[in-house]
Length: 289
Ligand code: SAH
Image 1 (cartoon, rainbow, N blue to C red):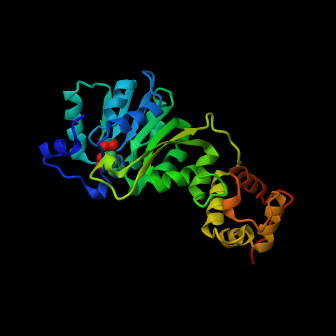
Image 2 (cartoon, protein in one colour):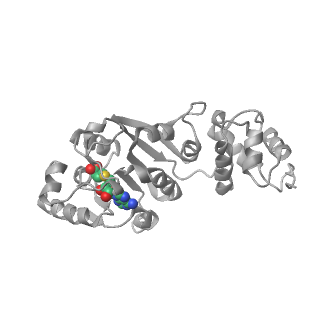
Image 3 (cartoon, protein in one colour):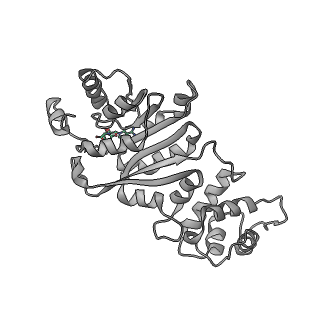
């Protein structure tokens, strides 16, 4: 792989901070990501933020087909030329914003599940995780680079300080493993923080553990919105249907001590809460006055 600095210079380009451009310079890290994605010739890969192709090229060598999403048109153009130089023909470059891409339709035309990879811009990583959760029925796994703190939050177990809203929502539908820690000097330009690669494997077929997923999201948001408070108070404060009595009744019905805090609840306990929260059941949560 040509060094990012050299390649950019040849094209008279500079890294754009606004696009979160920190290019991988260490091919060992690129190889570690591709290895963790466990690609074979039958796989269709979606890469988010292909940049200069640090991951695109090794992925194309291992997979059947790579759909490389890159928002920056100049980079998409550069990458196209680079791939031709390397005689790589199984990559399709989509010069688009990832949030304008529908992964369901990318998977649907062949019926196989996608494998996602990417060294994500830090300013959109949380939104990307939410997007992947929303489209998880089309995704087998995702191996992604995150800012270290966010990666730790996604993988955090209950009871730890980093365990929060996204940990619950992701672990509800996926297994999360740490792949490797990546120091700031593996990138050009060098970011201020260290990074971490994690592998997300979505449960397939998606287990329908709660009947109303929107409700689960609202409960989790309310619980962690005031994470220092007891659940009785955080749920009463964050859910319009509940006052403290209703919140207490709901928690007891779900077998959870109302004095506990959000960060101590397992994913299974959040699921129980969502399933007990049903205006039709015996609970009869009172209307808030
Ligand atoms: N994968 C490359 C580039 C990483 S930098 C490498 O590892 O070297 C992140 C890349 O994401 C940049 O190329 C940036 O232009 C692109 N990007 C930023 N926002 C994007 C968006 N919303 N949709 C798609 N690509 C985006």
